[in-house]
Each structure stands twice: as structure tokens, then as C-alpha cells.
Length: 111
Image (tube, rainbow, N blue to C red; front, side):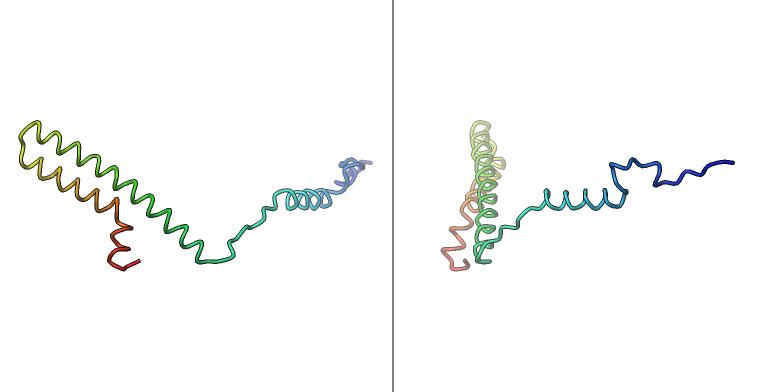
């Protein structure tokens, strides 16, 4: 006569049933991994901060383009190439416009 071993007999008595272990582990994870949500009081503050961040990225790109325009103008003066000089000045003025986009928009009253 064979004895049948049930799943309850295989687990150790100190460990408890698997459902209890799962629920205890889930409760522990929910408690430990809970992150409080910190929100600003004024939604307009969030929009203004995002706008400042985006304009700082645009300004950085404008300064990079401005620097590249200066390099192109310098190289065109050295090589006496009129088309490269034109391209350099366009890049230079475009970089200036991009770098000071926020101030230009504020001056014409858009912002």
C-alpha cells in the first residue's frame, strides 16, 4: 500500500502555507517600495519650470550653433571663400537668434 504525500506535508511547518508567504511578501514590498508623490501647490509653477528648462536647452543649442558660425567665418576669411563666408555669417546670426529666442519673444510681446 502506497502512501500519498500531499503538498501540505511537503512544506515545512515553520514556513507556513504558500498563500500566507505570498501575502506577507506582498505586504512587505508594498510597505518598503512606497514612494510619496511630491506635487507642487501651483500647476503654473510646474509649467514655468518646464518652460525655463526647455529654453535653457534651446539657448545651449543656439550657443553651439553660434560657435560653429564663428569657426566657419574664421575659416572663410583664411581661405578667401565667399560662399563659405556667407554660410558662416548665416550660421552666426542664426545661432544668435536661437540663443536669445526667449528675450526676443518677450520683447515682441509673445511671452
